[in-house]
Length: 350
Image 1 (cartoon, rainbow, N blue to C red):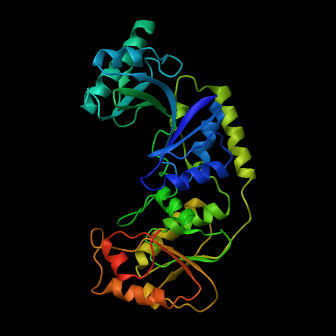
Image 2: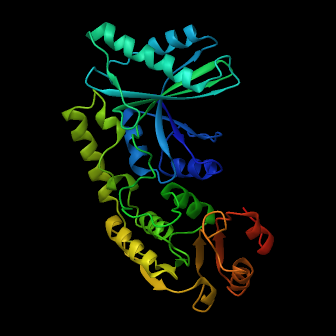
Image 3: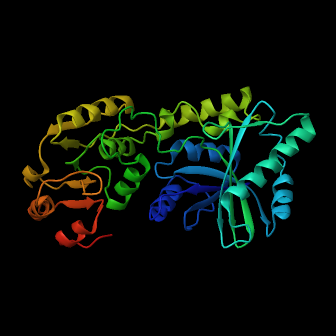
């Protein structure tokens, strides 16, 4: 059994924990910064494909005391890197250092990188190259209280990069955060849902994918683990089989999901993104201030504009509060980007 770690955006850990348990992963426990779980290698692949909320999926390669640069070097070098890295692979190392003797994270990454490439050079005669921007193998070191945890990144590019959003529009919302907001909102995947300030359509698209049980990783062209030295034809065949299993589980559930915005250009972007994602939405050019509560119960989930990101009209927040007050029987979930929203809107935040 391998130990994995699903990294989370701050404050979305509980939503990610619930998601992983719902997906059937084992030994899942709530933790700050992300969620540990256990399983065979295939479970790491499955997490990359199925998790909507995780930012990255790591495998834990080892945990060691590392109070000195020498101790850190020897600990990282003691891990067998040869199944994953050859001189033909490129490698990158990131690190974070907290409350440790080696306080400079850049130096932590440098010593860890030296340990890895020295091992490969001694075993195979030459060193792999370092690539900062697009490495085949990505390593992360978390050093806290003089103890290092060494992670190997299965994801490659961050998991919020689904592959459907060719144009993000202005001030885009990460797909993983949109998925977390939807889960936190309490939406049951059946009640009609509207995002009245949809921008590039991320919340509405994520809602449609969740309702339809479309694994978000199916839209990606490649994951990091596919670039490792140990990923060959047999592994590629097994991954293809796993993707086929997930595609067979796509549901016919199609609740009414409306993406609305005042900006016609934003709506065109949202439509294009929805087509790329393979989901069907209803689109409406409309101001949120014209929203009416007639027509039965709805769920409203949105990321409203706020001054730091986008210019808003005078009194917009006060007017929005008035709109929300007339949506009797609706469930409303806002991503409050500023204290102004909490002050102006008389609802209890979650």
